[in-house]
Amino acid sequence: MTKPALLFLAHRIPYPPNKGDKIRSFNLLKALAKDYRIFLGAFVDDRHDWQYESELRKYCTEVMLLGLDNKQKYRAFTAFFRNEALSLPYYRNSRLQSWVRDKISRESISRVFVYSSAMAQYVKGSDFEKLHRVIDFVDVDSEKWREYSLRRRWPMKWLYQREAEKLLEYDRSIAKEFDASLFVSSHEAAVFEELAPESKSHIGFINNGVDSSYFDPEPDYENHYTGSSKVMVFTGAMDYWANIDAVTWFAEKVFPVILKNVPEAEFYIVGARPSDKVKKLSNYDNVHVTGAVKDIRPYLANAALAVAPMRIARGVQNKVLEAMAMAKPVVATAAAMEGITQLKDLPICNDSGTFAQACINLLVSGDALELGAKGRQLVLTEFNWDQNLVKLESMLGDKESSLGSDAVQGDSSASNGVGEIAL
Image (cartoon, rainbow, N blue to C red; front, side):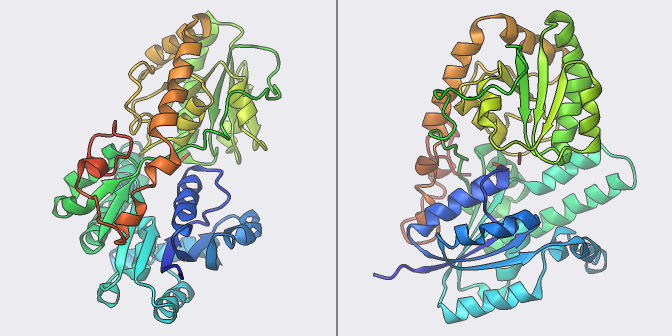
């Protein structure tokens, strides 16, 4: 029996699964490919990612990839003349629009899965109202822009505030029109329900997952550290503003306090494309910036603990889940733990003093091993991709939908919550 066709649209190529949004989009794609013939349309913003088109063809019937370049940034500013969010013209492409219309017609496509709200414009409006459309917003991005505006001065403050308002207006129109709207955690879904109450009945969430067989603490990983057993590690893309802000705050405000109490402590910042600001942090005592690494598991496995000092974050932080999967204790801010509320023993600290003291306690006490074990167990039970993606097919209209039921929209402590993701 021939599988039904499904149009899958993503703002960024969903491979390789090496950063927050790609991890989620790839796992969604892989799960849907079991039951559908996937027609994938996506953008490529990193020239190194073109090589992965062949990998995606293992899961897709057809792949349509388009490059993003600096010209797109200039196109984004046409939003001021259109009174719309900047992200819409940035991802607007006539060639992709023609491909979408052609595939829907030629392949008799009746189901669409959209990853990221900017891609919804390709199937929005009365021409597409007969399609069964599901969108994964992942995070409430308008809230991210609002939070950014609170930390910036004019004119960026005004620009971010405008983007927050225009994007929320657009996202509400999508949610009202589409059959289901998904988010990465119960918290993100609840936030959007408050902002878009008219769509509450079809807002849900699917928790992120971790490949716990890959992030396995048992193997004997090579130790890249310089000898100290009291290493704290941060992992993530280091050209991302929220990550830059996090490690800068930790290195300047938190780590000096730790170092006074634990002189052998070291802080490693592990992640690709470190900004100049991040590189300069290596001038501080015992702070190391690695840049890109082939495998982050050895850095997690041989660290004493992981830190997630995010002051701005939305949804579920994969860096936290991956550290927990590797049985590492995590010290984090409330923002970093927004979608992971089940582990009550995890230190959550929002000021530099309490954050430093929590790290010191774990570095010098015997509690780290027990807390790490609890974290891995939580990942195995609550953040399992196979388990969390069971509901996808019902959301696409092929089985009785459970949106609105406790299994989908209930408390996040349930194993399959619906009503995350960034590095």
